[in-house]
Amino acid sequence: MTEATLFLPGLSPVGGKTITATFDGGTLSSNGGVLILREIEKKLGLATVLSRHIPDDRDGTRITHSYSDMTRARMFAIASGHEDCDDLDVLRSDPALKMACGRLPVSGTDLMSQPTLSRLENAPFWRQLARMGLELIDLFCARFERVPRCIVLDIDDTDDAVHGQQQLALFNTHAGGYCFQPIKIFEATTGRPVLSLLRPGKRPSGEEVEQILRHVIGRIRRNWPAVEIMVRGDSHFATPEVMDLLEEKRCGYIFGLSTNTRLIEIGRPWSEDVATCRALSKTQKMRRFFQTSYAAASWSKPRKVVARVEASEQGSDVRFIVTNLPGRAKVLYEKVYCARGRMENLIKDMKLYTRSDRTSCHRWEANQFRLFLHMGAYWLLHELAVRIQELKTRIKMALPSSYPHVQALTALATSIAALAP
Image (cartoon, rainbow, N blue to C red; front, side):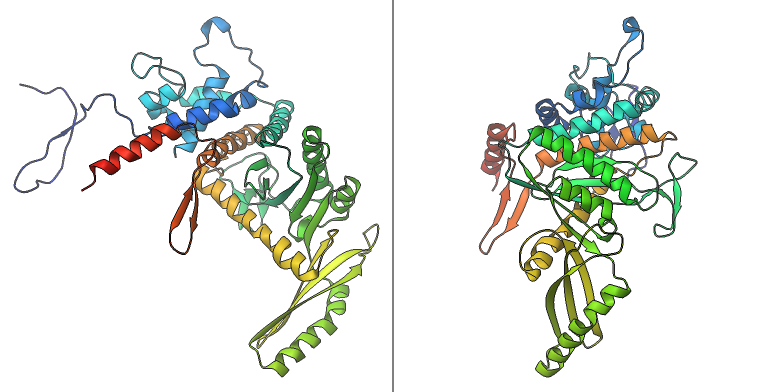
């Protein structure tokens, strides 16, 4: 009997028996987890947020895929590890992905192809993108069960390498090539994304950061008028425009502060004092903290500056931060400022797990929309994430309180455990 089914050639025998592998397994999928992401997306409404502002001038009688369906499929694919637009050319018939998008696994219409998705990505212009960004901030606020007393916004930028003649691409010596330099804002306590903004591959100016924070803080305060906001960032965010804005908006801030001749002069006696104490105590390393009032020539007024002075056998090192927060210098530096290091890990997570650096379109608007799609995929993964804590006698896994299939997952784990030897 002749088999018409394709087979996989070249498999070596095992135990003297040949292996025949044919592609006749039926309706199978390796993306079953996307059905859980579907439930999370329905609760968040991400596809609606990202698609309802896109102008749709298509002929309604000939539309097969709505913008919300395309947005949903794209986010599900990204969250499942298929970050490239043309991955949907292969996955458009995947039964699990079709079900996640509300289509029957076999008889339902196949999903959209790469050219259709590319037209979607190029559809929005800057006004629609601005509305999407503001609504994503609204989504961030809506995910809290109750209005928090205080939130901490960590702001940073990151390099995003480009490969071609793309709008906003600039040569950046630090990145070692042409790149974008998008700005990311995360909320420190929850790790939730607030903003992912595409921008040219250069260091942001004080005026630019001030405008970004003005819109972000204004939108958050529109949802929570009385919330206390603290902003953290490294030294290139410590500009007069940013600090003046945050003081105007009654926000706390703590930023790194680049050294200059005057700060080196201020810190010299502290360095000498710590180096002397270390030598007398014969310790390998000694760290001390100091604070003073300081005003750069471009600042509108003096501000509190904290210095971390460290002495070792290799010499002394001084680093500065500027803040309007009350408290002891040691606590402000070690407990408050240094905690912003987690922000870099959140950016790495977004790049690693959603491949958010796949910004290969020519138009900057299309690449910004892609950033929002990857941000949406990150939201899906974040809501599904598990927190793992190693304790002294056990390891604790904390699944999300809002997980939609608690009973089903518990029953499945129970059944598997019962089959164990």
